[in-house]
Image 1: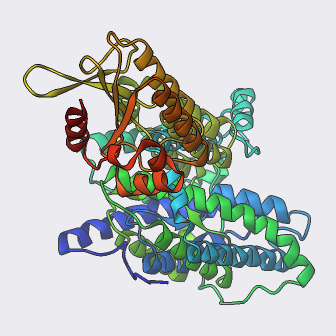
Image 2: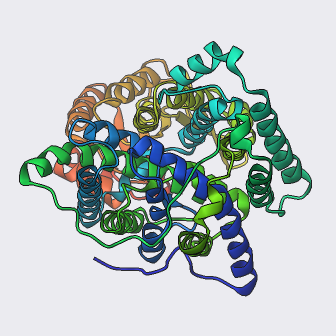
Image 3: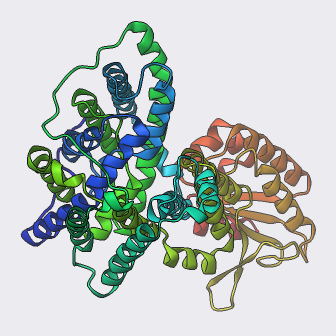
Length: 552
């Protein structure tokens, strides 16, 4: 297994280093309170949220390839393991933390196996269209999740629909000072993002929020704050559990593994596309494995490639893992010296910051472009976004993969088919393969725009027969331009052989041009070459037409 250390960091110049260091500072100001919030979902002590962005972040920077992916605490995986462990031990207890650590370690082992067997290709099944829809759905999901904290309305649900219902029902319980503070934070960040995009406004907002909260005792006036956060470095401890407990944890780790593979791949891919970069999904899987192993040994919980925090890093100007390393360095300083002031940070300030990130996740420009260029794909993006928002992140990811595959199958099932016709000046024109069209009297040159397989072979044979039967003059030569074909499966080969026999009975000569070596091997293996005849299979269309002219 080839190792490529610090791929997400290189190359780096001085200007880039300064930019990413500043982005890391901004990222820390936005994410430190957020990872503390995730511990409420995970059922772990608040300080474990900081642990997730210390050694795990460093390990991914060493082994991963993505320049943008932020690996840290995540609501989806936190909800999965906390739900699975709820009946095994009291939350935040020593036993519970051992179980949490073992889930992270098992997840790391599964990710290592995925790297060994090179399962990174799974990310290729996510099209750009559904990635835009996926990230849009995540934006809506996060934005709705923040409404309760922004308004002071108690929200206990984890599902987006239930959260929205609780906010709607609790409108009469709105805490006006909390809501006003949230709106002020959102307005400042969005306003300065438009006019002064490089100014680290979230950092200023956090520092100001802590200071004002301390001076005016926000907690005493009904504005919720984060509360005490213990300091100190994590202890490196192997999570000890019994064999029976280990077996019970495997399904939980498998669920976390599936979400991590899909969500991290989707997130790293969408930001790589946004910045015209390429990522090595297998290296990212190795980085995620190392990050989860570090989380397990340092008293943290399962970490994941976070869409929210990656978007935060991107909007802060981060363009390499140096920003994430800077983030980890600041977390180290906070753990050693500054956990005390964090307790005064108003939850509404944190919620307002995250809400602005949720807005940034909705890529309105790409959605507009998709709608204008491909309405069908636009509908796929909207469906993906709706499922992520209304049903769940994991279901949205699975749907994104399914829709991408279905779209590919649909294109292969109904590919573009054309007939080549001369334009009078020696050039070829491509026209739709409508029955009644011919290249010239007695000749049809037909292009089929996909591989031949069991789902489209009948379409191919039916269209060939229709072109021959409805041609203005009797067809003696039917040339297939096979430039788009790379293979033929067993079912399609049988249909093609039956077509060859049928055309021979009609005294129509079937010729294949632009046959590549892979298609030729399939034709040989399935006996098609023997049926058509070696002399009627060519690697270029020019040679195929020359053979037709020579046999007329």
